[in-house]
Length: 289
Ligand SMILES: NC(=O)c1ccc[n+]([C@@H]2O[C@H](COP(=O)([O-])OP(=O)(O)OC[C@H]3O[C@@H](n4cnc5c(N)ncnc54)[C@H](O)[C@@H]3O)[C@@H](O)[C@H]2O)c1
Picture (cartoon, protein in one colour):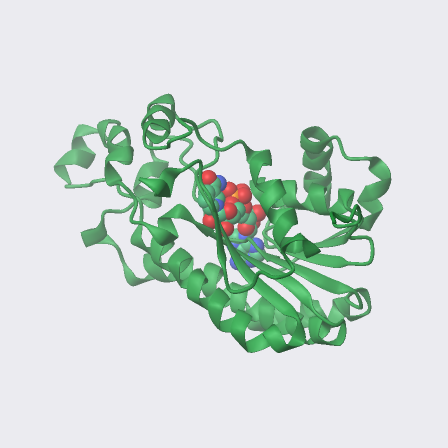
């Protein structure tokens, strides 16, 4: 029988890393609407910014905003993460849901961003590769280490680690060809080629086994750990990119930012009670051919 309170999360507290970002705000609004107390850990945005965006994007009932806490925290910094959890101690009695969502998602807004964002493989420096790992892998590890003892005390929980299709497959670099056409003659002469970086792909694939390791280790505590692997979300990207991306996707379009709420709530709630160590791929069919 289907239980009507599957999505009643009113006795839970959720932590969302990178919850101030584009998709993090969608998850925040959805978890608040299901009754969860939500704590965002993000190193950038202010609470006012997040609230203004939430009101604009999700038409959230204003009363629910009192259930939202935003803490500025760099999840790659061990001391900051420890201090944050110490300061939150009294709010974590019902910690049941952790969404490890923070990542380095660099957006290209203008031509000069191109070189900093997408460096060609042969020109990449160690720091360009390491900055992805420090957020996706070290950050996820540090926040998970702090969260698990609360979940153990609470009789269990659900941890959702966010990956990408680029963590299960290599990016098709031809999608980025039109960015190369925008390069100046001088940039071309310097041998600059724009590519999707390997650091993002490898750190996102690391998430898959980090999930399996923690899932098997803490299953005895009724802590479920799953990966949610996402395809590209439309965010006012250049039209040539959207066209090329859509052609590679059986559903023939990029995702809408609300379309990952359902999968997230499925993994967060008892609807997925027999699922752990798995990878839920939601990509419009991108990985199916
Ligand atoms: N947008 C997409 O098309 C897409 C596709 C596949 C997967 N994803 C994944 O979804 C997740 C969210 O992506 P998004 O598009 O909302 O990105 P976003 O850039 O809008 O949000 C990421 C958030 O993480 C925060 N963050 C970064 N470093 C941090 C740190 N050290 N400490 C704390 N917070 C930090 C940022 O401040 C930002 O608010 C990421 O894991 C991303 O890889 C996104």
